[in-house]
Image (cartoon, rainbow, N blue to C red; front, side):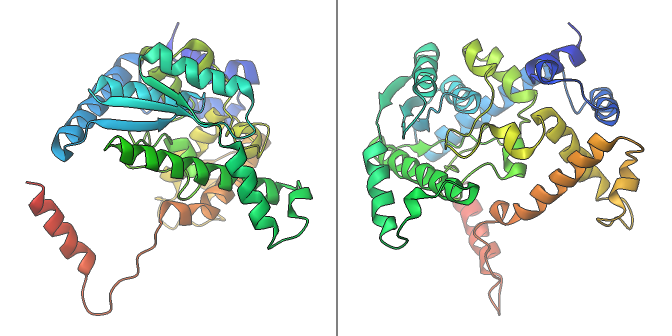
Length: 326
């Protein structure tokens, strides 16, 4: 199987449907320039990440990693990488009014990877929080529009993260971040609800690199082939929420990161720089990608630290941190 066919298969694009002409040409170009690398190169990337995780463990004197096992590929891959780096990995399924299949997949991943598993049903605590908040907004619980589903999803994520940090303290360890690069751009994560202490896969693309690495790391096939979902009850799935496949999203994000560096580039000139021609589907994905990237930037810059009026104390503190780490 050639690389392009494998990318289309593992990204599920082959099942979703063909790429538009512009996106297919963009994929060919990314394969040619080495952005979408071979499985052999990804194995080297994996080895480099594992080595960094091992170095972090030794340098900081920690040995345990706590991970929320959602039943998805990201948490399973993250757990596999930590284990390969010699960490004691503790996996937690934390259902909140959850599809039982997702919890089952999370438990199966723990068993397949040989890590410990604990299940804590947080549904009663979640309902208690909703009941308490309803005192501020009578009738809130009866609303099921996107905005209210999003707010409830954020509560779920933050309740789970509070649980994981409590367990990390118990094990004298860290909470693993399971977000990938595609989610980082799309804003598919909750502030103070998803981001932990160490993020081994945050630079990897969801479309190709994450499932390929998961397959190579012993993650069960029914997990790395599954349709991505946030597990928060917000939408029918990640791709339904962003309005395109992860492969289409990744290709457009990569194109935008290049295009904005063109001399004199503006929002209005980007379509001409990218040369969509008559490809209406590519133009549609450009519009939604640009809009989502623009409105989620604040999450990637959080907290936003304001400069002290008289001196740059952050850099001075960072200098001390670097000194003390040697």
